[in-house]
Amino acid sequence: MTDVYITDRLIKVIRERQQTVTEAITEGSVPDYAAFRHLRGKLEVWKEIEDELRLLLKKRDRHDDE
Image (tube, rainbow, N blue to C red; front, side, top):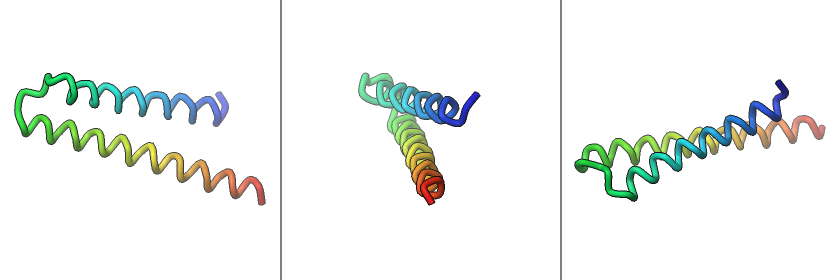
């Protein structure tokens, strides 16, 4: 497997997880406010992971260009 495959697959998984959490929140299947807060926290963590991965990729690309 190449780095590109792993990176693309990881980004796809992250987005799928974000979508799953978003759907749980927006479709009203959250039983109470505590569960809602838990899901919002999960969504924020997935977003942070995605942002961090993108930042690392940018750094790698800049390093490869040098």
